[in-house]
Length: 160
Image (cartoon, rainbow, N blue to C red):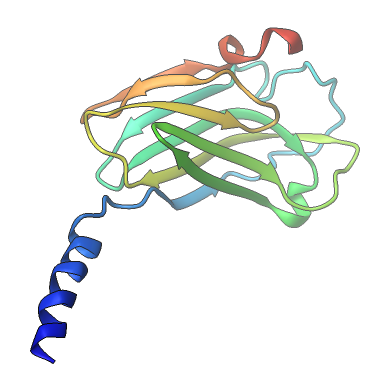
């Protein structure tokens, strides 16, 4: 029995102490649909305000806030979902409408996700998908970080 314990203790220490914290979605919030309306696909949300992505360091993790997005009106019924995963140094963040698509869009003032488990001082690439796919965004996750990004600059050239 003692021999088994001498074997198990180092294995358990390796399993629990050797792991980095897992990257996970801590929270996701959204302001909901401001008002449902028919809009041309190229009309900006928020009364012409640019859509921005704000990356900010916090004690809980990386806070990713999207402003002035156009989402399908289905969010009024079924809400929105958010998924996060990581491969190497690439963070995949996908925000999407739940439920069946309707024939209207509505402005959403803010959506905010908090991702934990990142290492301060490391360089990452954000692969962001929401109302379309955007070009990868490179950043270094560090204390005091706050990046404000104009998403129009990250739209793939084929969709412009």
